[in-house]
Each structure stands twice: as structure tokens, then as C-alpha cells.
Picture 1 (cartoon, one colour):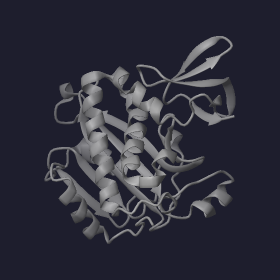
Picture 2 (cartoon, helix red, strand yellow):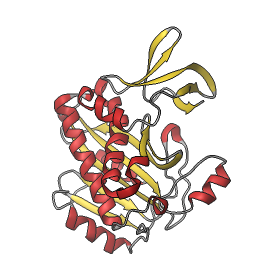
Picture 3 (cartoon, helix red, strand yellow):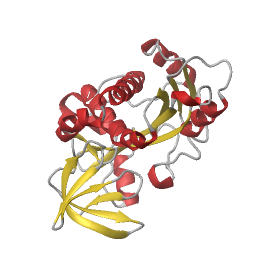
Picture 4 (cartoon, one colour):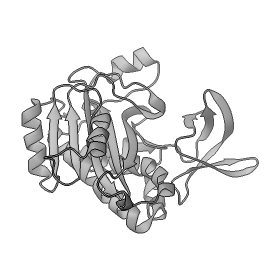
Length: 276
């Protein structure tokens, strides 16, 4: 049975710090607007007193949490695990879009390592939704800002994730689509271990992306790709732009869709993808 109980914020922060001693700052709030927004603001202002990045910030409740395309993240206290990490990156601006599928891949691989018997059902739906079977388990949001200390050093990337701990069946009925939760996955690991494992996976993936490019992740993505071989519709504001068969990712992290006109790349941040 999964451990889905959230310890008190101070306790959880201390448990995470023990697991991430190399992180410059780890804190956990009872309530905040958005952990992504908090870290972005701190990075822009370069708040004094904080250690060197990576940083991690979580909250039991987010009032203005967001998903991709600006969608609100609905949550109630104790129902979801929500946290964000900030990392420095020297990636060029043109390479930043690959961070979105990279973050979803790394989170999926990390959760698979904890999930035991449920591991094979955990997959990533491009660009970065973590799925358990046909239900969405986690949403990931990647945002960047210029490095405030040394603009020549590149960017600060903030990766946030919200994972349903409970209420999968209730949310499925309310939203009229499959929603999964961590309780259903059945991983018997402490919440702090989940957070630390995902945070380490993100850090390692960002470093590997800088060194090797997304080309090094194409095969890894294929092993956990929830859309591979499935008919998909490419949508923009509800309008169907393309329909075809999902065919993996390219070296830029774009989704490849095989259509009658050939293989078309789909870019992060322009469109969303729905299984037909």
C-alpha cells in the first residue's frame, strides 16, 4: 500500500534535506500561491540568504498553481504532492524547449524506480504528463528565466510537478476522463523519498541534456512513451491541426506524428496532444 500521508511541512522539509544534502535550499510551506512562481521570483531577485542552486520548494496547498497552457491546478490539502526545483543551465535559448519532454521522462523513470509491481504501467504522455495506465497521475510544468547573477551563464530552469496522492476515482468522475493517484500505484515509500528521487532525476537529466543534447534521450523516451503507435490529434485552441500516428521524438524533443503528408514534428509550447 502506498504511503500517501503528507507529514507536517517542517518535518517533510527536514526529511528531504537529509536526502538532498547538495541542494542549496529546501523548504516546504503549508500554503502558497505557486511553488514555480515562488522559485522564479527568487531567481529573478536572487534572494539573499539562499544557498547555491539547486533549490526545492514544496507546499501542502497551492492557490494559484498552474499547468501547461496556463491551466489552473486544482487541489485540496493532502490530496496532491506539489513541489518545484530550480536549476542553473547553460543551454542556449533554442535548446530550452527540450526541457519539457525531458522533465516528464525523468519524472516517469524516477517514479518507475519506486513503483514496484506498478512500474510498467507508468508512462509519459508527450510532452510531460505522467500516466498510470490510461489515467493522468502527474502534471509537469517547466519555466525558465535569465540568470540574474550572471546573464552570460544562461538560464534558471524551474520544473514543477503535481501528483495526485488520492481522489483518482472522484476526479475521474468530476472531469469525465481517467485520473490516477499514487495510492493506486501501490508504492510503499515515504513521501520524502518520492520528492528526493524525482528531484535528483531532474538534476541529472538537465546536466545530461547540456552535455549530450536530447538525442541521447530518444531511446529512453521510447521505452516509456504512452503515445507510441497510437492515433493522435494535434490540437491548437480546440482546432485539429494534424491527425496521424505518434512516432516518438526527434533530437529536439519534438513529438513526431506520421501523417499522409509525411512525418511532422510537433513543438512544445505550441499545441497539445490528445489520443484520438
